[in-house]
Image (cartoon, rainbow, N blue to C red; front, side, top):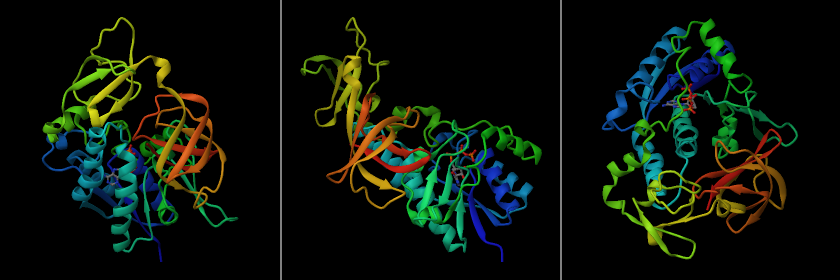
Length: 356
Ligand SMILES: Nc1ncnc2c1ncn2[C@@H]1O[C@H](COP(=O)(O)OP(=O)(O)OP(=O)(O)O)[C@@H](O)[C@H]1O
């Protein structure tokens, strides 16, 4: 009997080609789009959102073309509590969250996997660019960088557990994006030329501050910019508007460029300073997950990156309190609370955690 795979379809070219490849490999493929955005968000029906009507229309057309069953399931409540509210709460606490990491942890590889299991699937699949591989020596599942370095998405997948890795297929890991588009065109997929989504799927126009303001207006309070000595330099619009390393949009004229170097939510203060003040060589992360092993037992040399688009840098990680201490060989620019740090050993994802 063919093994059943439920593929998450976002209506884009990646998940569509992934569905096609799985079918070619002989799986019994079922497509599902998770509806995640609350109906009352005005942009829902616009082009491009990952679960807007157009996304569902596109996924429906792709499923028809591939001749696979296709369903739309409601994940709105869990998405609201685990992703949207988390995102807002983190900003209000002076941090800079990564909602895609929360979505992968709580929605795609948790709730979605659970529902797929109820439907009798052995695996779920996504159009992520990453490679899942079993290490025959240790018996553990590994997560590795995709062939297309520019598209590699391992950074947002570091939380995956052994169970999740064992029950997930990522058919695009060995392909470049160009090749994926070529396949889409060759087989006549209606979404072959659709552009990549780059924004946060639930935030209209990528204006996250407006999104938070509309939802929690009473919690955004103007306060003061201060220097490292606590001297007041001017008024800020509310801490959600700022992130570590930010220079633009501060509205301060001090005769020299200044940068956000810290945010103190308890006092509603934004601390600004010189560029040199945003370079640090040490960070502490919690909520850590490791993939090639269960627990970090001692020091380990890795390369680490502190945000999706950051360059990897040489570092040593070691267990510390409830998490991990990361010491970089050279100071890193704008290490930011709420973002994730992810560790690599060559092409293998070692793990990661949330910067505290
Ligand atoms: N609303 C959704 N419902 C089901 N699966 C989804 C949904 N959104 C994303 N996914 C799955 O997660 C994968 C990664 O999502 P991400 O948003 O990072 O990529 P994407 O650029 O939207 O991919 P695609 O080209 O497939 O749209 C997708 O390829 C898809 O398999």
